Image 1 (cartoon, helix red, strand yellow):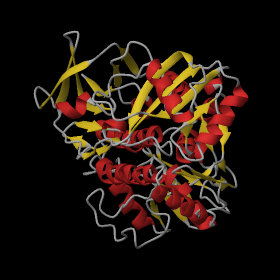
Image 2 (tube, rainbow, N blue to C red):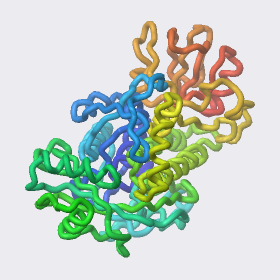
Image 3 (cartoon, one colour):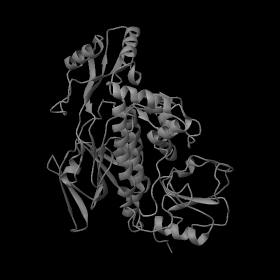
Image 4 (cartoon, helix red, strand yellow):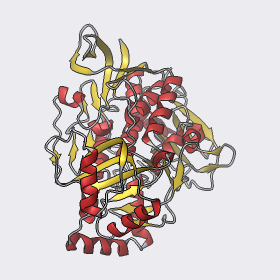
Length: 494
């Protein structure tokens, strides 16, 4: 029996495997496809994802294959300059192909000792208590695999979600967009001019040149004629040409497609992220339109929240309710993203009402505070977890009370002796950042590091950080610290 089976070797599943291996948890990743897909739908890593890569020592690998971008707002076709004062030490995003993201995370998972089995399709699932509590998955080749826990990271049409009977309510697609990478015979200047003209009225249209560094290859986005009855069937090149001619008056001479796909504006969310020993993450837990480029980021951040909690459960030190806090914390975040993508799709409309609304919204975003709010929402740096009830304790400070840092992730602050905060978090452990030199996590040193240092950017005596970088406690009282260590990191060792 292995510790954890992860179903799905996309960015979410691979990030989860990395997090679990950092805690010494045995992990097997099952992937239906025999080879990584050539499709690169998710091309942007937002600020919070950049931060978590830095927290795990992976950022340099991604910087080597990415370009930085600084677009503020980035909401419903409205782009503004990057806002001043966004609470981050990494004020940028990364243009990274999804194929590179998968490759780099695969390499890291294998380095850490995860096992990845491609060509392994799950067709059945059973949870039981005998001979020891666990989950058994049946594979299409007639074999099976048993583990203590299982996490479905297998996409919007998740087999795991269906097998455990979790509802996936939401809104069906009302519009559909075609997406694909292909070559074009039309010259670059003409394509750029046509795109600029069409986008004055139709923002669901575009042609990005030299996509993922491939000279002459364009990423084409164009509205579909309607919503396909079977959205699992990829569009044809002829369908692309017809829609290009209908929308732009020319098909640019597109040919030699690398891949073709379609997406709609459906929004759905799993009713529960956990059923017994089975959990859901990424698109298996939520789907939404790709407006704002949030989908891949949302899934990777699910994994970052879940990984240390599931590892704590496997390793036997998790306090009561810690694993359930994954649903409590991430389900509201998973709901907020479909909500904002609904709003963005409304702004992208071509009718007079949406057009007027978009013009008004663009003016509002000229206010720095509005731009900063929208950018913080899209990039996920504004995520704040309610720590008052998520692990079954009343700690005396709901979100409306207590210090403003509680529940938020701490940015990469500069330290006087250690240099930066994030390199101290590469091993996915808790961290007591102590400016007083009088506190101690004695009894939890196998789970929590203690750093005595000062910072001009941190105006608290001390802060207790969870392995995902969110602040669980601030203060200077040792007895109060011990209480919160128990609440987040379980029973102390002798």
